[in-house]
Image 1 (cartoon, rainbow, N blue to C red):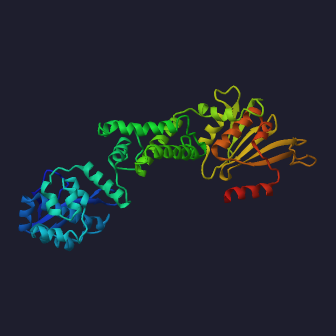
Image 2: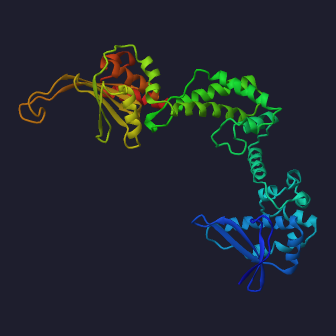
Image 3: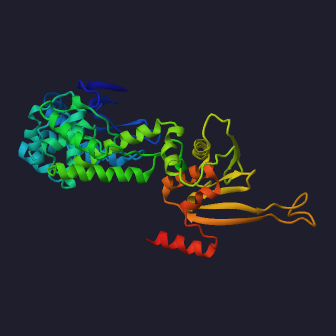
Length: 428
């Protein structure tokens, strides 16, 4: 039989129950293997109950000290009830100076106390009883999150100035640096907002005209890491020059905002639009547009493209790559059967091969039946500089075939020589 003897307004603050005639503290903490909340209990006396009823500060201090014991129990272990009971007299019945001394030697959850109104400066000085004079039953979780975020920064030796903090609030990254940044002007003190906007304007000017393209090798909505790194470096250098007083956290959040917005624009851009820059780079070298092409991957899946298609060949090929590319599927081919030529892209090696048919096979089942002659091909290899390089080469090929690739070399026909070139590049 379990009866609730005492509980507070906040359901998470430990309650006191009577179970089979015995007084116990009951609290929820942690989660089990199924992510359901765990409940723990331990015995107390009447004197402890009296203090819990009358003294919110002592009640919260007890909770703060017991929570680490609950964490130690994990998802299925038992609460160390002896350790919990051993905390009762020193926290609930001892003099304030003795309570402060105890908290210098035990683990306790500072965030719980901060959430319930503890004075942070006094807490940091070890005056826990004095810090809890303004304690409240209701919790302010945002206050606890900000305390935790500042504590993590302090461990890294980072101290935010008012403008630093305002910039982090503007991007929504004051509490969590991994949060996707966005623009939240209402989160900033109006007096600091003009200064924040000057920093943002510096970043916008620095990356004006820059873009982050898509990288279909990593999925349909993935973006080019090199483009991201280039924009990130450009923005950070400009902001540091113009605003040297800012800490690195503030500079990084501004560059993260610029890059995230550019990546978002790239993700919402059609593959047709995304190919425009590559087409411009590939214009040199012929414009004998293909009429029909075949796309294949390393799994034998094939897709046909015809000039009558509503999409360009390059855009449709990269859509094919975005749909099919995977860790075990990194070789893609574009073939013009009518012209007897094609290219093979090796994403795993940042390389490409262009293949030209020099002589068609002769006879039915050429290369397989007696009297038939095998076809003869010229295969040449070249290194590729990331996804932008691949885009340029694909656009050049679909515009003018293998001849249009001549200006995008060098092309090596000797496999051993090419492998040496690739190893030299990879060793840099």
